[in-house]
Image 1 (tube, rainbow, N blue to C red):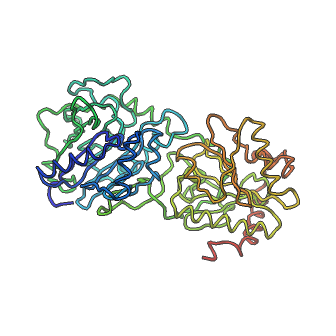
Image 2 (image 1 turned 135 degrees about the horizontal axis):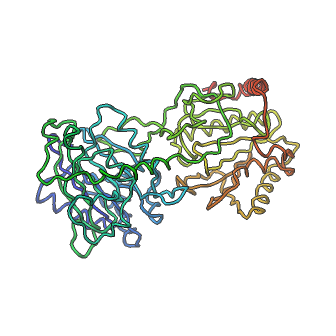
Image 3 (image 1 turned 30 degrees about the vertical axis):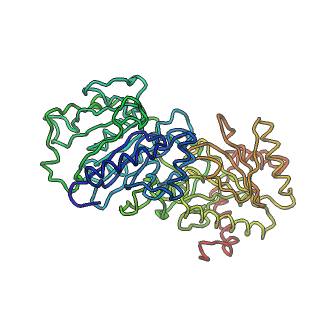
Length: 537
């Protein structure tokens, strides 16, 4: 980006009309000179065959965007296919998907916060939706610093609820249905100088509003909220907005807080109670059944920002998202028992299960806070595979089969349950049959998926699911739609068809003394040591 004021373009819903957008940008740049960045909110991709055809030209390189373009993620299931990951990535030359949520800082110091999708109305959240937990993570990552003044730009597809209060009149928008309280809370906290949104088919340039209370707080900069229409609107509503901006970090403090004559009170001034209600709903329900040794060690993982700027901008270090409530599985938590840890790698660790089906029933867990396998960054997945391979070799050496399952439903932290089944109990095919039959008895259909398939190709992050992986590499998968028996994976293995220990189907009934647990862990560590990748690497 150039020195001095940055020249930025913001655009509303493109809806796949890329040629219209970029031809318009070329025309503007020919007349007014080059701009530094194009920021797109709302629906960037369309759902028609024509839109798909246009995108194919840019994706293949046959056509190229004339300016560095940053876009938000999907707002509907139909367009999730265009975004290969929740993390930010380059979609085509000069077109970058920012990610699900996060912040990037340009070389100039410009800070742009972003939140993709619309607010989730159901639990679990679809891949194209955000939750109050996402917003809390984003707020915390910025406001933790005592030097935080606000961000330069906030990008959301959905409008903030009530943004029109105390402002100029709003036409052609149903205010009863429009907007999200969670987005309003985000805007109130981050204090952006510019906030762009779309999706409503309207152009609304609200009067600037204050971010401080007169006579009670020191003066702060104002916020300008600008909603942009969709490119294809027939009423010639404004869909493209051009502006110059000097980053907060480079501005003279006196100039920064100057108040324009038409400034109003904050529209979120009286929404404190509504914001509080969203905070009360943030903690996900958790059927926490295992406790582990958690030291102060953290792995090197991808950040909660989930995405980033174009290559010429510097990103904040990637870290795993922080839990919004106490988590028994994060390796940094001080609340868990410390005697059950078997092995600690860079990104994952293995621990004995408390209340396990057998003394060598273990869990593979990410050191950082991730909810499911499909949300894991590539470096964490790579280490999970090392854990699985080491456990398979160990169990085989003692005459047992490897069986692993995950339940991404009513859980806050990924738990890969690994249960060994003695060879003499049953074959792999019999274990597979037990899962299929017992699922059918509960009106569930387990689908067999290819051995080397990636779950990320089957299920979107945020969706609920259950899957089993057998020692043969075969996988059985079930997409959870409404309810799901929490102990299903365990109950099948405890049944007469497999381990024949039905009295241990409920982990709460499997209580061992501290001395027994220490003995189980010590024995496991000694046997596992020759296979432990964390010691061999």
